[in-house]
Length: 501
Image (tube, rainbow, N blue to C red; front, side, top):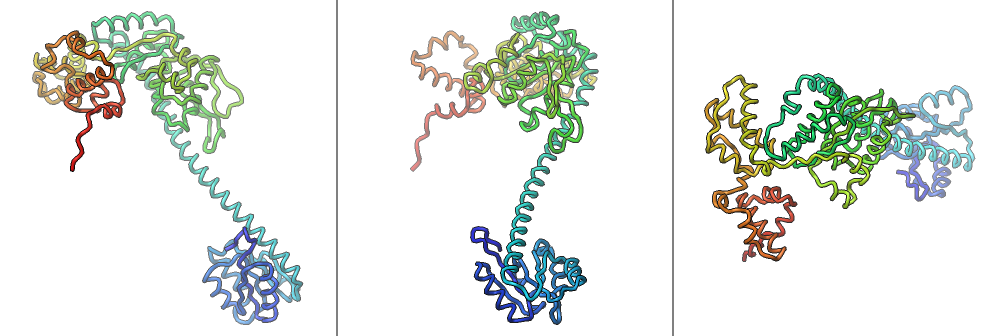
């Protein structure tokens, strides 16, 4: 095929006159082209079947299969559609020329021809061919990109449709679920829970103050966010919860702020974002520490200006949304690492609610367990079974890496397995995370463990790692989660096994 570096092309000359073949072979060959020859239409078709050339010089009048028929067959072949075909004709009759173009000719040269004219027309058609190929490649690239954008837009449309449905349902749901999501939905008597309840009551009147809720996964951060919303003057307005970790990066800005028709390929109509869905109410940004930096700056602008600019919009519009954010990571550490904006942190953290892990509020475990038993039996329409003292003791010793969510799941499964009978230890499935206080350690005060620690920090770290591994029966992932460290760090601290052989 055509080689641009050498400006050469494969050219087929078809003519029943040997003199013409010889002249054209030499002229085009001297120009650096790879020249093929055929003295009949049938021979030309055989040559083309072996490999399509870049251009064909085709005699119009030949015995047997003439030039028009050769051209017709070439145009019928898929692979030869873009092939330039120049007719060589001794006839100057207009009808013959029109017939040639009707069959698919791209140009013609009258006999007797001049060599410089043939070369000029050949070079022109080759250049047109190069441009057409480049254009086709560009079109293929654009088609591929358009298909990709169309797929992304389909995902966006589905997500926004789901969000619209959720917004309508949540609006109604929030009005009738004060029992579950208001202050009455909180269970516990520990000092930390009483402190959180007082903070929620304090926030009832400050219904525009941004709140940052911190705590491990499963501690009930969304429950607190909903309680703040329901007990505020915005309680009858929408509550829209968004997981920042689950938003596709390419769609994040459009999902949050919306877009206008034509903002990007596939944007066939205006679409509202989460801010618009929550207008008048509350937008809950869960896992806010996972938000990309470039989106953080745009979020900060919206929070400061109280104005949303949809993608493709010529101007923004004012919104009235209260922002509640939650994180299970240390945002101050994220700021130090350059992963979170300091100014956004202070904008979100106007008021901070710290939610403790369940292992730090063990006084609430029994109350929570009985509360969940009551909720599930009410849903199932059965009586509330007893929680045996042995089962309760096992629940109170558990580490709960999944926090309140884990306890809720354990109680639900225990109720199903007990079939209405009293909850016994064998109904509790706690194998995923072994008790944080083992039988041997239950009698060892914390102070005694501290007294036994060495003064060397490195040795203290090893001692803590070993204790965590004992409590989790060698489960490295669970031990790492219990300690709040990356498990790779724990692997590096493990004693190396002696090599075999």
